[in-house]
Image (cartoon, rainbow, N blue to C red; front, side, top):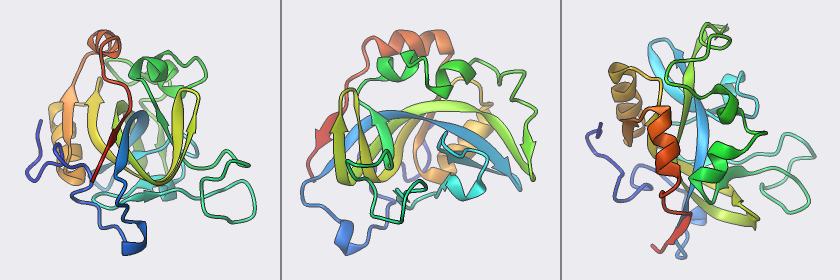
Length: 199
């Protein structure tokens, strides 16, 4: 599914970055997972940390900005804290992480324990994985990164309907593909690692 005005070639096309954050150095493309929620007929992406908090929704066509919830306010990320927007260097690492929620919640249909979750009018629709553009201040770690700014580039959905995939693609201006979980696991063995994209 390709949305009109897709950002497949330039994932930052829809991102209105303030001049102070526009980097001459480019951005990184990494891998991550999101939960998908529906509210008032619209679908949105959320990070796993604090996923029940609607304030943790990734805004459509704007950068998602890291903020620290653990210590006194500071610009995120910093090495002395675990804050920042996470991205994995490899899809296989994301899917194989035993401590990561996607590993336990992903399936070809929403899991029976979570599919009925309705929190203050926000309804859980499933877990998706995909590529994410990371920029601003980026800290590299073994197996991945923490960044200051991010925007989804494309999404692989194992459990969303065609209508839901189209709505998510249209909202974020990205490509959203249906991929069965078994095929996604096969893809993870050959998917490209994180890479730097110069501007």
